[in-house]
Length: 359
Picture 1 (tube, rainbow, N blue to C red):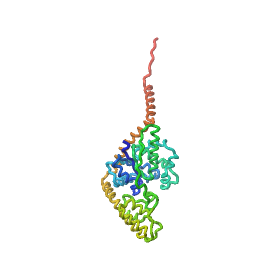
Picture 2: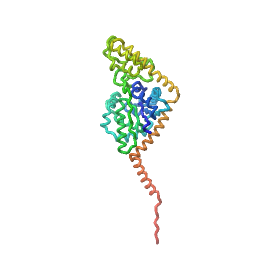
Picture 3: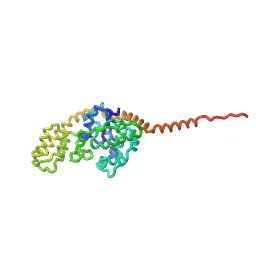
Picture 4: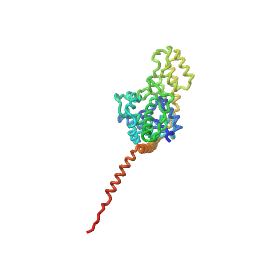
Protein backbone atom coordinates (compact mmCIF):
# COMPACT_ATOMS: atom_id res chain seq x y z
CA UNK A 1 0.00 0.00 0.00
CA UNK A 2 2.84 2.41 0.91
CA UNK A 3 4.30 2.42 -2.61
CA UNK A 4 1.04 3.94 -3.82
CA UNK A 5 1.08 6.81 -1.31
CA UNK A 6 2.41 10.35 -1.53
CA UNK A 7 3.07 12.79 1.31
CA UNK A 8 3.49 16.49 0.66
CA UNK A 9 2.48 19.78 2.23
CA UNK A 10 3.49 23.18 3.56
CA UNK A 11 3.75 25.23 6.73
CA UNK A 12 0.65 27.39 7.35
CA UNK A 13 2.50 30.70 7.34
CA UNK A 14 0.47 32.43 4.64
CA UNK A 15 -0.78 32.03 1.11
CA UNK A 16 1.24 29.99 -1.37
CA UNK A 17 3.20 31.64 -4.17
CA UNK A 18 4.75 30.99 -7.55
CA UNK A 19 7.89 29.63 -5.91
CA UNK A 20 5.80 26.96 -4.21
CA UNK A 21 4.13 26.20 -7.52
CA UNK A 22 7.31 25.52 -9.50
CA UNK A 23 9.05 23.92 -6.51
CA UNK A 24 6.42 21.34 -5.66
CA UNK A 25 2.77 22.17 -6.35
CA UNK A 26 2.99 21.50 -10.09
CA UNK A 27 4.41 18.07 -9.24
CA UNK A 28 1.66 17.46 -6.69
CA UNK A 29 -1.08 18.26 -9.18
CA UNK A 30 0.39 15.78 -11.64
CA UNK A 31 1.14 13.06 -9.07
CA UNK A 32 -2.04 13.16 -7.00
CA UNK A 33 -3.88 11.44 -9.82
CA UNK A 34 -1.44 8.50 -9.59
CA UNK A 35 -0.98 8.18 -5.82
CA UNK A 36 -3.11 8.13 -2.71
CA UNK A 37 -2.18 11.60 -1.52
CA UNK A 38 -1.76 13.06 1.97
CA UNK A 39 -1.32 16.82 2.31
CA UNK A 40 0.15 17.90 5.64
CA UNK A 41 -0.60 21.32 7.12
CA UNK A 42 2.70 21.44 9.00
CA UNK A 43 1.97 23.74 11.93
CA UNK A 44 4.48 21.99 14.22
CA UNK A 45 7.20 22.73 11.66
CA UNK A 46 6.01 26.34 11.64
CA UNK A 47 6.84 26.57 15.36
CA UNK A 48 10.55 26.10 14.62
CA UNK A 49 10.71 29.67 13.30
CA UNK A 50 7.33 31.22 14.26
CA UNK A 51 6.12 30.28 17.71
CA UNK A 52 4.42 33.29 19.27
CA UNK A 53 0.77 33.19 20.34
CA UNK A 54 0.06 35.57 17.48
CA UNK A 55 1.69 33.18 14.99
CA UNK A 56 -0.30 30.25 16.34
CA UNK A 57 -3.55 32.22 16.30
CA UNK A 58 -3.20 32.53 12.52
CA UNK A 59 -2.90 28.78 11.88
CA UNK A 60 -6.60 28.08 11.33
CA UNK A 61 -7.02 30.91 8.83
CA UNK A 62 -3.74 30.21 7.06
CA UNK A 63 -4.59 26.50 6.84
CA UNK A 64 -7.81 27.33 5.04
CA UNK A 65 -6.04 29.67 2.60
CA UNK A 66 -3.32 27.10 1.97
CA UNK A 67 -5.81 24.37 1.13
CA UNK A 68 -7.71 26.74 -1.16
CA UNK A 69 -4.45 27.51 -2.99
CA UNK A 70 -3.72 23.80 -3.45
CA UNK A 71 -7.22 23.11 -4.73
CA UNK A 72 -7.00 26.16 -7.00
CA UNK A 73 -3.77 24.83 -8.49
CA UNK A 74 -5.56 21.70 -9.68
CA UNK A 75 -5.72 19.16 -6.84
CA UNK A 76 -9.13 17.49 -6.68
CA UNK A 77 -10.66 17.39 -3.17
CA UNK A 78 -11.88 13.81 -3.54
CA UNK A 79 -8.34 12.61 -4.31
CA UNK A 80 -6.54 14.29 -1.40
CA UNK A 81 -6.39 13.87 2.37
CA UNK A 82 -5.61 17.18 4.12
CA UNK A 83 -4.67 17.08 7.79
CA UNK A 84 -3.42 19.34 10.57
CA UNK A 85 -0.10 18.05 11.89
CA UNK A 86 -0.54 19.13 15.52
CA UNK A 87 -3.90 17.32 15.73
CA UNK A 88 -2.13 13.97 15.23
CA UNK A 89 -0.11 13.68 18.48
CA UNK A 90 1.11 10.17 17.63
CA UNK A 91 3.48 11.81 15.14
CA UNK A 92 5.31 13.24 18.14
CA UNK A 93 5.80 9.74 19.53
CA UNK A 94 7.31 8.59 16.25
CA UNK A 95 9.51 11.67 16.19
CA UNK A 96 10.87 10.75 19.65
CA UNK A 97 11.67 7.21 18.53
CA UNK A 98 13.31 8.34 15.28
CA UNK A 99 15.50 10.92 17.06
CA UNK A 100 17.66 8.05 18.27
CA UNK A 101 18.41 6.92 14.73
CA UNK A 102 20.26 10.03 13.52
CA UNK A 103 23.20 11.99 14.94
CA UNK A 104 23.54 15.70 15.64
CA UNK A 105 26.51 16.10 13.22
CA UNK A 106 24.36 14.54 10.48
CA UNK A 107 21.59 17.08 11.07
CA UNK A 108 24.08 19.94 11.17
CA UNK A 109 25.07 19.04 7.61
CA UNK A 110 21.56 19.69 6.27
CA UNK A 111 22.26 22.89 4.29
CA UNK A 112 18.86 24.60 4.43
CA UNK A 113 18.53 24.70 8.24
CA UNK A 114 20.98 27.57 8.76
CA UNK A 115 19.29 29.48 5.95
CA UNK A 116 15.89 28.95 7.57
CA UNK A 117 17.20 30.24 10.90
CA UNK A 118 18.78 33.26 9.23
CA UNK A 119 15.62 34.12 7.27
CA UNK A 120 13.61 33.89 10.50
CA UNK A 121 16.00 36.29 12.25
CA UNK A 122 17.28 33.64 14.65
CA UNK A 123 20.80 34.33 15.90
CA UNK A 124 21.04 30.77 17.21
CA UNK A 125 19.36 27.64 15.89
CA UNK A 126 16.55 26.29 18.08
CA UNK A 127 16.67 22.60 18.99
CA UNK A 128 13.38 22.07 17.15
CA UNK A 129 14.78 23.53 13.94
CA UNK A 130 17.83 21.26 14.12
CA UNK A 131 15.44 18.34 14.48
CA UNK A 132 13.20 19.55 11.63
CA UNK A 133 14.30 16.73 9.26
CA UNK A 134 13.57 14.08 11.92
CA UNK A 135 10.04 15.36 12.48
CA UNK A 136 9.69 15.44 8.71
CA UNK A 137 10.73 11.78 8.67
CA UNK A 138 7.95 11.06 11.15
CA UNK A 139 5.49 12.95 8.92
CA UNK A 140 6.44 10.94 5.85
CA UNK A 141 6.77 7.52 7.45
CA UNK A 142 3.69 7.79 9.68
CA UNK A 143 1.44 7.36 6.65
CA UNK A 144 3.86 4.95 4.92
CA UNK A 145 4.44 7.33 2.01
CA UNK A 146 6.37 5.77 -0.84
CA UNK A 147 6.96 8.97 -2.80
CA UNK A 148 7.65 12.59 -1.85
CA UNK A 149 7.71 15.46 -4.39
CA UNK A 150 10.64 17.75 -3.57
CA UNK A 151 12.26 20.99 -4.59
CA UNK A 152 15.97 21.68 -4.25
CA UNK A 153 15.64 22.83 -0.62
CA UNK A 154 13.69 19.77 0.49
CA UNK A 155 15.83 17.02 -0.98
CA UNK A 156 18.43 16.95 1.87
CA UNK A 157 15.57 16.71 4.41
CA UNK A 158 13.99 13.76 2.66
CA UNK A 159 17.38 12.07 2.39
CA UNK A 160 17.41 12.06 6.21
CA UNK A 161 14.01 10.33 6.09
CA UNK A 162 15.44 7.66 3.83
CA UNK A 163 18.36 7.13 6.22
CA UNK A 164 16.02 6.90 9.22
CA UNK A 165 13.85 4.30 7.47
CA UNK A 166 16.86 2.21 6.43
CA UNK A 167 18.36 2.39 9.92
CA UNK A 168 15.07 1.42 11.55
CA UNK A 169 14.59 -1.53 9.20
CA UNK A 170 18.16 -2.69 9.81
CA UNK A 171 17.65 -2.69 13.58
CA UNK A 172 14.08 -3.89 13.90
CA UNK A 173 13.00 -5.55 10.66
CA UNK A 174 11.42 -4.42 7.41
CA UNK A 175 8.61 -2.24 8.69
CA UNK A 176 8.98 1.18 7.03
CA UNK A 177 9.11 2.11 3.34
CA UNK A 178 12.17 3.97 2.05
CA UNK A 179 10.46 6.79 0.14
CA UNK A 180 11.53 7.89 -3.31
CA UNK A 181 12.00 11.56 -4.16
CA UNK A 182 10.38 13.03 -7.26
CA UNK A 183 12.20 16.23 -8.18
CA UNK A 184 10.55 19.33 -9.60
CA UNK A 185 11.46 20.29 -13.16
CA UNK A 186 12.09 23.89 -12.02
CA UNK A 187 13.60 23.39 -8.57
CA UNK A 188 13.76 27.04 -7.45
CA UNK A 189 12.34 30.39 -8.52
CA UNK A 190 14.19 33.61 -7.69
CA UNK A 191 12.31 36.31 -5.84
CA UNK A 192 11.00 39.46 -7.48
CA UNK A 193 13.94 41.29 -5.90
CA UNK A 194 16.43 39.00 -7.63
CA UNK A 195 17.38 37.17 -4.46
CA UNK A 196 18.09 33.48 -4.73
CA UNK A 197 14.71 32.32 -3.47
CA UNK A 198 11.12 33.52 -3.52
CA UNK A 199 9.84 33.66 0.05
CA UNK A 200 6.83 35.04 1.91
CA UNK A 201 9.05 36.12 4.79
CA UNK A 202 11.36 38.06 2.46
CA UNK A 203 8.48 39.96 0.84
CA UNK A 204 9.58 39.04 -2.67
CA UNK A 205 6.76 36.68 -3.63
CA UNK A 206 3.86 36.70 -6.07
CA UNK A 207 1.00 34.78 -4.46
CA UNK A 208 -1.10 32.34 -6.45
CA UNK A 209 -4.14 34.25 -5.22
CA UNK A 210 -2.88 37.77 -6.09
CA UNK A 211 -5.32 39.83 -8.12
CA UNK A 212 -4.23 41.00 -11.62
CA UNK A 213 -3.46 44.54 -10.48
CA UNK A 214 -1.30 43.24 -7.63
CA UNK A 215 0.61 40.98 -10.01
CA UNK A 216 1.24 43.93 -12.33
CA UNK A 217 2.48 46.12 -9.49
CA UNK A 218 4.88 43.43 -8.29
CA UNK A 219 6.16 42.68 -11.79
CA UNK A 220 6.77 46.36 -12.58
CA UNK A 221 8.84 46.54 -9.39
CA UNK A 222 11.01 43.56 -10.32
CA UNK A 223 14.77 43.81 -10.61
CA UNK A 224 16.30 43.43 -14.05
CA UNK A 225 19.82 44.15 -15.36
CA UNK A 226 21.36 46.62 -12.86
CA UNK A 227 23.87 47.83 -15.45
CA UNK A 228 21.20 48.85 -17.93
CA UNK A 229 20.39 52.52 -17.39
CA UNK A 230 18.44 53.16 -20.64
CA UNK A 231 16.32 51.14 -23.05
CA UNK A 232 18.84 51.62 -25.88
CA UNK A 233 21.65 50.04 -23.85
CA UNK A 234 22.16 46.32 -24.64
CA UNK A 235 20.99 44.27 -21.67
CA UNK A 236 21.83 40.90 -20.16
CA UNK A 237 19.20 38.19 -20.29
CA UNK A 238 21.09 35.52 -18.37
CA UNK A 239 20.36 35.80 -14.63
CA UNK A 240 17.72 38.46 -15.27
CA UNK A 241 14.71 37.61 -13.02
CA UNK A 242 12.14 38.97 -15.48
CA UNK A 243 13.37 36.68 -18.24
CA UNK A 244 13.66 33.79 -15.79
CA UNK A 245 9.92 34.21 -15.16
CA UNK A 246 9.23 34.46 -18.89
CA UNK A 247 11.04 31.15 -19.39
CA UNK A 248 8.84 29.44 -16.79
CA UNK A 249 5.43 31.06 -17.22
CA UNK A 250 5.21 32.44 -20.76
CA UNK A 251 4.13 29.65 -23.14
CA UNK A 252 4.70 31.85 -26.22
CA UNK A 253 8.27 30.83 -26.94
CA UNK A 254 8.46 32.97 -30.08
CA UNK A 255 7.57 36.07 -28.08
CA UNK A 256 10.13 35.23 -25.38
CA UNK A 257 12.88 34.65 -27.97
CA UNK A 258 12.01 37.93 -29.70
CA UNK A 259 12.11 39.88 -26.42
CA UNK A 260 15.48 38.36 -25.54
CA UNK A 261 16.92 39.25 -28.94
CA UNK A 262 15.67 42.86 -28.74
CA UNK A 263 16.82 43.20 -25.11
CA UNK A 264 20.34 42.07 -25.95
CA UNK A 265 20.39 44.56 -28.83
CA UNK A 266 19.05 47.49 -26.80
CA UNK A 267 15.81 47.69 -28.78
CA UNK A 268 13.25 47.13 -26.02
CA UNK A 269 12.77 48.69 -22.61
CA UNK A 270 12.33 46.99 -19.27
CA UNK A 271 8.75 48.24 -18.96
CA UNK A 272 7.61 46.49 -22.14
CA UNK A 273 9.31 43.26 -21.11
CA UNK A 274 7.58 43.47 -17.73
CA UNK A 275 4.19 44.30 -19.22
CA UNK A 276 4.44 41.24 -21.46
CA UNK A 277 5.33 39.17 -18.39
CA UNK A 278 2.33 40.59 -16.51
CA UNK A 279 0.03 39.41 -19.30
CA UNK A 280 1.60 35.93 -19.29
CA UNK A 281 1.43 35.59 -15.51
CA UNK A 282 -2.19 36.69 -15.28
CA UNK A 283 -3.16 34.27 -18.04
CA UNK A 284 -1.38 31.55 -16.09
CA UNK A 285 -3.12 32.48 -12.81
CA UNK A 286 -6.62 33.14 -14.18
CA UNK A 287 -7.76 29.48 -14.09
CA UNK A 288 -6.49 29.21 -10.50
CA UNK A 289 -8.42 32.31 -9.50
CA UNK A 290 -11.59 30.82 -10.97
CA UNK A 291 -11.12 27.47 -9.19
CA UNK A 292 -10.27 29.22 -5.93
CA UNK A 293 -13.42 31.33 -6.06
CA UNK A 294 -15.53 28.26 -6.77
CA UNK A 295 -14.15 26.26 -3.83
CA UNK A 296 -14.26 29.27 -1.50
CA UNK A 297 -17.95 29.69 -2.31
CA UNK A 298 -18.76 26.17 -1.07
CA UNK A 299 -19.58 26.93 2.55
CA UNK A 300 -17.66 24.78 5.03
CA UNK A 301 -15.97 22.70 2.33
CA UNK A 302 -12.35 23.40 3.27
CA UNK A 303 -12.86 23.06 7.03
CA UNK A 304 -14.67 19.77 6.51
CA UNK A 305 -11.88 18.50 4.26
CA UNK A 306 -9.30 19.27 6.96
CA UNK A 307 -11.39 17.83 9.80
CA UNK A 308 -12.22 14.59 7.97
CA UNK A 309 -8.68 14.22 6.66
CA UNK A 310 -7.18 14.73 10.11
CA UNK A 311 -9.36 11.99 11.63
CA UNK A 312 -8.52 9.60 8.83
CA UNK A 313 -4.80 10.35 9.09
CA UNK A 314 -4.80 9.85 12.84
CA UNK A 315 -6.20 6.35 12.38
CA UNK A 316 -3.42 5.58 9.92
CA UNK A 317 -0.72 6.96 12.21
CA UNK A 318 -1.99 5.01 15.22
CA UNK A 319 -1.58 1.83 13.21
CA UNK A 320 1.95 2.79 12.12
CA UNK A 321 2.97 3.70 15.66
CA UNK A 322 1.63 0.37 16.97
CA UNK A 323 3.65 -1.54 14.36
CA UNK A 324 6.79 0.49 15.07
CA UNK A 325 6.50 -0.10 18.83
CA UNK A 326 5.84 -3.79 18.27
CA UNK A 327 8.87 -4.13 15.99
CA UNK A 328 11.11 -2.38 18.52
CA UNK A 329 9.91 -4.56 21.37
CA UNK A 330 8.37 -1.70 23.32
CA UNK A 331 4.91 -3.25 23.21
CA UNK A 332 6.24 -6.58 24.50
CA UNK A 333 8.10 -4.84 27.30
CA UNK A 334 4.96 -3.17 28.60
CA UNK A 335 2.88 -6.33 28.13
CA UNK A 336 5.41 -8.25 30.21
CA UNK A 337 5.18 -5.68 33.00
CA UNK A 338 1.37 -5.78 32.89
CA UNK A 339 1.34 -9.59 33.05
CA UNK A 340 3.61 -9.56 36.08
CA UNK A 341 1.48 -6.90 37.73
CA UNK A 342 -1.68 -8.92 37.02
CA UNK A 343 -0.18 -12.07 38.48
CA UNK A 344 0.88 -10.20 41.59
CA UNK A 345 -2.58 -8.68 41.93
CA UNK A 346 -4.28 -12.08 41.62
CA UNK A 347 -1.99 -13.56 44.25
CA UNK A 348 -2.69 -10.63 46.56
CA UNK A 349 -6.44 -10.97 46.05
CA UNK A 350 -6.53 -14.74 46.51
CA UNK A 351 -7.95 -15.85 49.90
CA UNK A 352 -5.31 -17.05 52.30
CA UNK A 353 -5.09 -20.85 52.67
CA UNK A 354 -6.09 -21.89 56.20
CA UNK A 355 -4.20 -24.92 57.49
CA UNK A 356 -5.92 -27.75 59.42
CA UNK A 357 -4.43 -29.94 62.08
CA UNK A 358 -5.42 -32.60 64.61
CA UNK A 359 -5.68 -32.18 68.40
